[in-house]
Image 1 (tube, rainbow, N blue to C red):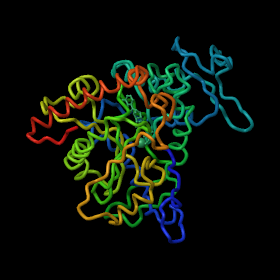
Image 2: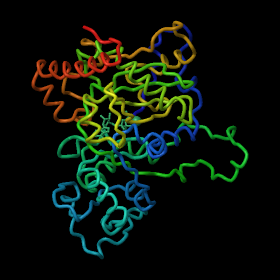
Image 3: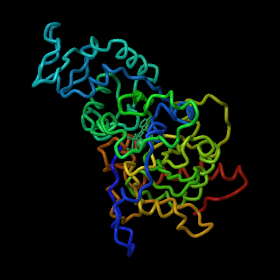
Length: 405
Ligand SMILES: Nc1ncnc2c1ncn2[C@@H]1O[C@H](COP(=O)(O)OP(=O)(O)OP(=O)(O)O)[C@@H](O)[C@H]1O
Ligand SMILES: [Mg+2]
């Protein structure tokens, strides 16, 4: 989870600026838990790219929390810090717990320390085609992508997964600060609820999520802000300018709105949340390759995939909006009947990164997309044209033309 900057000062209000924390509605612990991947994935699996969630043991959580990185010894290709610090090839006796400044460190290798879990992760990677993108309850280790040979979150072995998780501050946030700035759910107690254990950090069920790796195009990732089961606003997620996006605005808004109305709006446990979607270039290829849904849906309209659900909380990055703006929209400070805004990065916007210079190394820009970028404007345009053709065909089939140039 990335902390969003407190943008109280950028609202232009004449009132004395208040901090975002002062005015943000309280965030309940249950809301945070509802946004954990394993919680919502259980409901919306047919709409997500292929993924598996693996319950984590306390042994594994201790391993993640400890300083130092002891990696498995059953992998050949991984070159890591542990190779140079001499931990590889330690004998049984050296693997025993040792006391370092009062803190007990378990130096055993993951293959001895949590063999079953290690094997399960290995098998799951294989089942998902050999390449996965890892995530804990709420966060992916985007800030640690630089640790891998590919500079992405693509992992082929459990060791690569462990290395990313252990190197990431975002993962540490999931482990140590999941309920930071949250309130209890006391007033929500219903009959029979008293039997439930209290929602404390100690009894958070942690899961490792492994998502089948696919080369998604970051220009087609969007974040959507929902309040009272109503879409308030949408934003591009990737911080590059894409010339072709404005002409697809109406199509994108209606595809996402249709998806939201049919799936999330009626069933997500909380009325306020933030969700991320991806609109694949070619629904058929992508579905065959990475989708969990086995139906024979021949609908050729742009398909919307659910990537993540995030808390309605300052900790969620509001990207091209400020949380102040969103809270105002929430309070109805909008023109009645106005269409939902999809905010895109303009060519000269200060937020715009150089094309092919993404925010967290290449983790947001799969290699083939980088290649398109590096091939220059023409290749990008060709790509855009292909996408537009698909969309236009779909719209024609529906008998309504919403795309035009
Ligand atoms: N199956 C996948 N294969 C390859 N890349 C993926 C896959 N799923 C997601 N990604 C990429 O990883 C990025 C991060 O994923 P996700 O949004 O789940 O992480 P996050 O930590 O929750 O991010 P945030 O902090 O912005 O909420 C996505 O924006 C997407 O570009
Ligand atoms: Mg997220």
